[in-house]
Amino acid sequence: MAQGEVLEFEEYVRTRQDALLRSARRLVPDPVDAQDLLQTALARTYGRWETIEDKRLADAYLRRVMINTRTEWWRARKLEEVPTEQLPESCVDDATEQHADRALLMDVLKVLAPKQRSVVVLRHWEQMSTDETAAALGMSAGTVKSTLHRALARLREELEARELDARALEREERERCAA
Image (cartoon, rainbow, N blue to C red):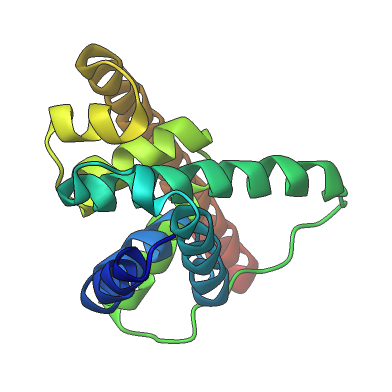
């Protein structure tokens, strides 16, 4: 790669690093994993930088690399998972409502397939248009719309199920205290 290309890439990373890290943070729940995801995507993109003709599309290219990398990691981890009898209790460090809502949302997003999660993140968090999302993910606008529709329906179902579970636990606790 020519010296000018290297400097151009370094300047791009310096100016876009925060936005790209936010994108990575929305794709993986752990902040350390998000940093690793971004670094991996940047390393992969660095080798292909000179082939990106329109540098205005570099953000979309990097997001695509992050999504593909996250999918690779997800597939690899899926093989390492071991079922257990009881799930560990989830706790929220910060008691504020905003942090609790965010933690719940991040947890609920885990029920989505990687493609659905990518569409939800790009459309709602990144506030990309349907066409921009389609271009970033390499799918048609219709596929983005139908995937988003199914993903949001799945999220609603999961939230309703969790609400019912919470009510049942509260009822059991009240009955236990009354006895």
